[in-house]
Length: 331
Image: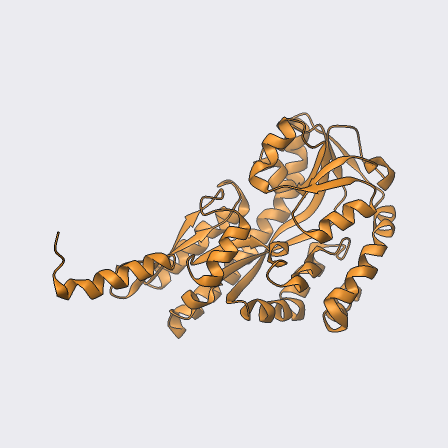
C-alpha cells in the first residue's frame, strides 16, 4: 500500500509516541501507560485507578493514565529501564528497586529505621524524599509521590520465628538487592534473590522455605496457600514511588503538571490509608486462611542488624544519613 506523502509525518509522530509509552488520543491528548507488578486487588492498583480517573477528568482528557497491573509491562527492572529511555510512560515501583540505577536508594532498605509509618511519612514527604527525588531526576526519572507497601514481615513453613535464632539456616527468598541479602544473612537465615513473579511457584515447589513481604502482598498474592507461619517482624517499612518518565513529564503543560501532582498527593494519602486500615484486617484474614501468627522480639532483631547499618552508612554518606537520623529521632 502506498502512503500519501502528507500522511507520513503524522504516522511517524504516532509511531514515536507509541515507542514512548504514549498514544495520541487527539491533537492535544496523551494516553500514558502506567505499570506495576502487583495484583489488581492491591491498594497500589486501587489508588492508581482513582488517580487516573481524577487526572483524566480534571485535564478534560488531555492526560490519560492507562493501568497495566500484575507485571503486564514487565518486572520492576524492565519498567525502570523503559522509564529512563522514555519507552514507558509511568509506573509504581518499590523504591528499593531503584538501587541498580542509584545505589543511594538503598537507604530506604535499612532495617528497623522507622518505628511507625507516621515517622516514615514525614521523612519521605520531607527532606529525605526530596534528596532521593533529586538523585532520581538525574537518571531521567521524575518521582511524583511516595506511596507505600507498609512494614515487611516473614512467612515460612518451618515454625514460628520469634527471635533471630529461629531464622537459622532458613532458605528465604528476598528481594534482589544486596541490602536485603546482607540483612537476612546478619539475622542468620540463608537468603537468596528471586523475581517476585516467580515467588508463588517457588514456595509451592519448596524451592524456598520462607519469604518476606508486607501483609497486603502476602494476602493478595495468596501466599497463605503455600506458607504456614506468619511472624510480624516489621523489619523494613517499604516505600514505593509513582514515577513518570522525565521525557514524558516534560511533555505536559505547566497546568497539567499541577493537576497530576495534586492528584498524586491526594491518592498517595488514600493509598497509605488503605495500607494502614488493611493491616489489621489482613492479619485476621490470614488467620482465617489457616496461618499461625506471632509477634517477635524486635529489639533482638534490631540489635542483630546493627552491622548492616555500620557498613551501609559509609555507602550512603554523612549527608543522607544525617537526614535519616533527623527523622528517626523526631517524635
